[in-house]
Length: 347
Image 1 (tube, rainbow, N blue to C red):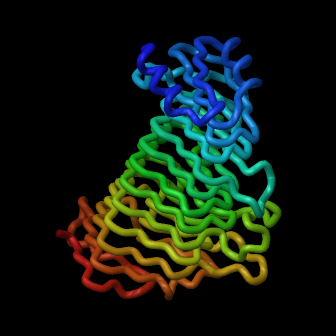
Image 2 (cartoon, rainbow, N blue to C red):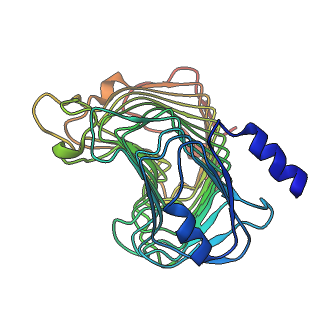
Image 3 (tube, rainbow, N blue to C red):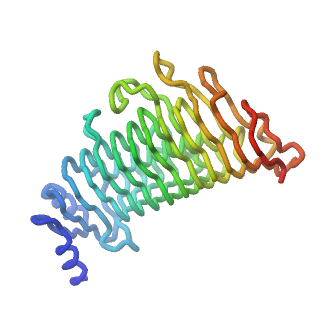
């Protein structure tokens, strides 16, 4: 351990420190003294929640032992980081919060995104349980990366991105629970652009397991004045099982849905919606759905695509998807709003 701490000290920026805490009192005392570049290592055990850090750049908060993560229980929010550019949050566990598990934001400076945040190996569970309460809430972030995280049981969104850009969610496992309202899994809205979600597993992850777009009050868009809920969203190589549908495209201006595996959605496979209808906003459009494996029960799925008003569904493209109604293979061919190219049915 001593050699490990010496190595951390050697890797710190000049003037930064490695701080080790092992209980809630030590942690709260340390939070008031943190400075740019510090590494805060938290020992195993249970900790009180409602922790707030603001304006500290290049901060690392992580488990002292990644195999025994500290557990932040109860409270309103486990952690709230505001304008912490370059933050790295690794190997912590949060559960039982009544509002959000982890909240990351730009401090309300909607024209000045916070850059370079990493969440890795974070576990969040049992948030809410009902209402608009998120496991991970992110507002006004650029270059965010959420990697190898586990989320189970939440009220509103599993991961809520509002006005975020150039960001990636990868390798995460997101699972719904009985007794939680779980409106969506990962959601990208409020001016999000260039967001990728890949190699994730979503099981029973709410009414809309992935939502590209959404419905956002105009005062929350980032940057102010943008005229789309989401733009250039990539959903690739995920497994999506259950949920009311697999993915909802809701006021998105350009998206790709490729290489995914869909298993047994409850009512539809996709939804195409327009919930933000203010003047000048782009209709839901320009979505490519290609190379996916889609398995469903014809007994449950009557319409493969639910299309709402005010959308430009004629701009969607379906190419090379495999559709299998496992209970009625002969009825596998979907009724789509546009003709599919090179689709495979019942194989």
